[in-house]
Amino acid sequence: MEKIKITAEELKERIGNIRDMYAETRGDFKSFSAIVMGESGVGKTKLACSGRLPILIDSFEASTAVVIEQFYPEELKRGDIIIRSFWDENSKRPTEFKKWSDQFDRDMEDGFIDLFGTYVIDSMTTWIETASHYVSKVNDRPNNTLAIQDYPVIYDFVKDTIKRITSRNCDFILTAHLLLNQDEITGKIQAELKTYKQLKVDIPLLFTEKYVLQKVERMKKVEYELLTTSAGRYLASTQLGAKGKLEDKEVPNLKHILQKVGYSTKDKESLI
Image (cartoon, one colour):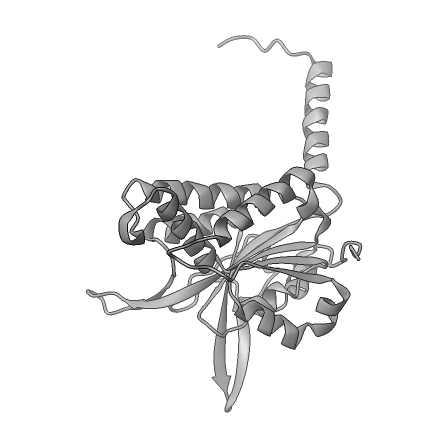
């Protein structure tokens, strides 16, 4: 075993540099990232808009605007919630992915995305679909059918992009659709992400917060609740809510979650 050659002074300096680097990376704005999953109509978009302002939403679904106009009209009017639409997608003549990708790269390079309290992609399902259409078109695949060598390209792009966003100084919310599937052997019904098989496992691993929204009926009244731990057919988990900071079922509101785990709920300065 070799003798340690670093002096006590050098050790102190090196540890100090590491701590300073960590503090600089985290900044004053302690950010978090979450994948918010659920079946259609359970309030994923509404929840994403309950985070720290201002909020930038890259929307790949026209229904995003309908929801926000209904529940957050004042924030939309003031510019505290900004929607960029990438809805005009055609699988045979795809345009939206390239348009989004170019804009996203600019946002990352010039720090535009860090001006926001929350950045949202709504939804993962349609976002990945536009990427698939683009890859198919660029590679001139017949009938827009992906070749086997195209899938790893899409998988790596999705995972790399999520990693890029989660390293920034803003909260990141990725909404995702769930489908109910029945196991042919056990008959058990399980909710799964609506995406490629490999990404069903890989994407959630990139988030500390894996939330599931569900709609329940109690006494003939419909209620919405946010699952932070697995329950029945749904897989959910939280690291921020460890040690009892969050209940298994929480009010579907991001600022409520932030307050309970000890994070600031203060908005960033308005951009307009």
